[in-house]
Amino acid sequence: MQINGVELISPAGKKLIQEQTKTADPMQFQAMLKGALDDVNRLQVEADQAVTALAEGEASDIHQVMVAAEKAKLSLQLTVQVRNKMVEAYQEISRMQL
Image (tube, rainbow, N blue to C red):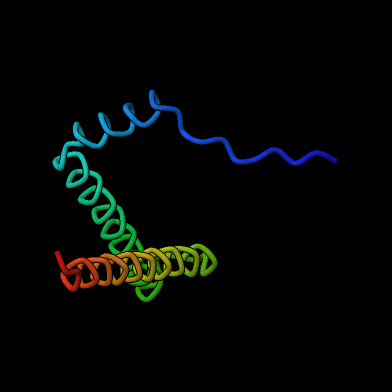
């Protein structure tokens, strides 16, 4: 069995990566982040509405209410973990000596 070594990035590949890094638009990241937070908020609102409907006797399927609540819970937990990682990265960068 022959094992091939890891191929290095070609100079053309390095140039492409550098160009993509230079042209990265911070507004795209902001829009992506805002969209993700809007999705989390939407799931939270849907879960609240489902629980309210169940409490008022309008919803008969408790399974759907629980699914909506779990989706909202998991999306919020993911958001908190991503925020924690971003804060850790910021703190690590701020501790770097230049």
